[in-house]
Image 1 (cartoon, rainbow, N blue to C red):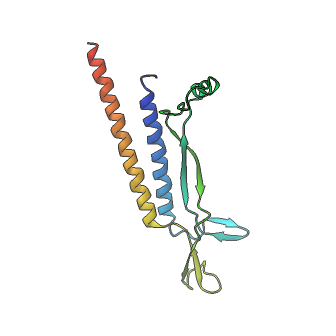
Image 2 (image 1 turned 180 degrees about the vertical axis):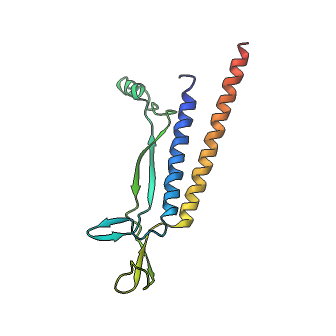
Length: 153
């Protein structure tokens, strides 16, 4: 294990959580966007997006461990990566009665995005706490490395 492995692991988590916060802020910014995408000649509202994370594999060591049939802990401590950003196609759009809205249908209903601000705030708090925890881990690791350098004096 290299000396900077834990810092690289923490850095990957910080990057992933920052992207998660960016996607959440995009969802919040588009909470009222009725013209998010043109589908079949008609505007569709913005669809909520979410980040999907997966364990990050060490490129060479994971293949070596698999080839040597060692224990299945080759991904432990190697970090996290964002595997994809996916749209929420399962949650239906909100229908609001507003006959004066330019995107209202013939009955006066407007389709609004499937973004729930309360859910987004919970996700944002979760991402923020995870980011803060990773910063704490990074600082603790840095302090340990500094102390180990002082031993050598």
